[in-house]
Image (cartoon, rainbow, N blue to C red; front, side, top):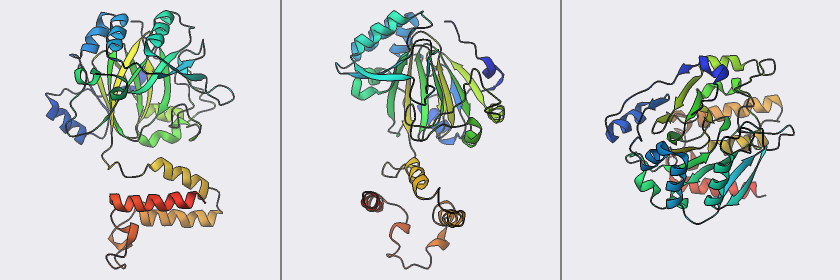
Length: 343
C-alpha cells in the first residue's frame, strides 16, 4: 500500500481507540458514546477481509461470487481529479453516474489500478441485502437489537468531502485502507458548507479542499482543524461516528471496500429534520426581521424548549399534535403537510 500524504491532516488529534470483548460490550459502548472511537480488528475474521489481504483480485472475485445479476449505480469521475468526487467550476458535479453490471465495473477498476490520472470509479452506498446474496450472513457485525441499514462502498483512490449523516454510523474497512477526518457537530460554520439542495450525495458538504485549504477564502477552517480528529484504518478496523458528526473520507488504495451500518435511535415514523430546515428556508428565512424573530420564539416555545407549560392549559384529549408524538399523530401531521404543500 502507498498511503496518500495526509498533508495538513497530519497534525490532528488521533481518534481514540478502544477494545471490545464481545457483542454485549460493543452494544454498551455504542449506547454510552457521544464521540467517535476506533476498534482495531473488529472484523478481522470476515471472509471478505481475508480475501482482500490476499489481493484486490481475490476480494473482487469473492464479491462477484455473492453479487446479484442486476445493474449497480456507479459514479465515474473525471481523469486527473485525484479521486475527489466534488463540484466542478460551475457547481455541477465533476462526475457522472451510470448503471452497469458489477463484473464490468470491477474490470474497469482493475484496468485503472496503478494509473494516477485514470478516471475515478466508485460504487457508493450499495444496499448489501438488495444487491448481494449471502454476503451479509458471512460478513457482518452483531449490533444487537438495532436494525441498521447495511451498505457497501467500493472503489479506487477517492476523496469524499466532509459531510454528516442523520443516523449513527459504524464504518468497517473490509479491503484496502481509509482515512477519516472527523469534526464535532458544532463545527459546521467553520467547514464552509456548500448548497443544501445541490449536493454530491444528498448531504451538504464542506467546500474546503482538505489537502490544500485556502485559508484566505476559508479562514475559519483553522478553527475547525483545532477540533478535528483523524484516523487511518486498515482491513478489519471499525470506526463509530455518532449522528451528525462531520467526516471527510479517503480511500487510500487502488481498491477499497467499506461496509457501514446506519441506525437511528428515534422511531422510523419520525420526520427528517433536514426537510424541516428546507421548508424553513422557503417559508421563514426571507421574512422581515421582526417576523423572523417571532417565528424563532415560536420554534423555541414549541420545539426546542418545550416543557409541560406549553400544553398545561389545554384539556387532555384536545392537544392534537402538541401531545407526545405517536405514529398515528405523525401520520396525521404528515398528511396535513402534504395537503398544504401541494396547494
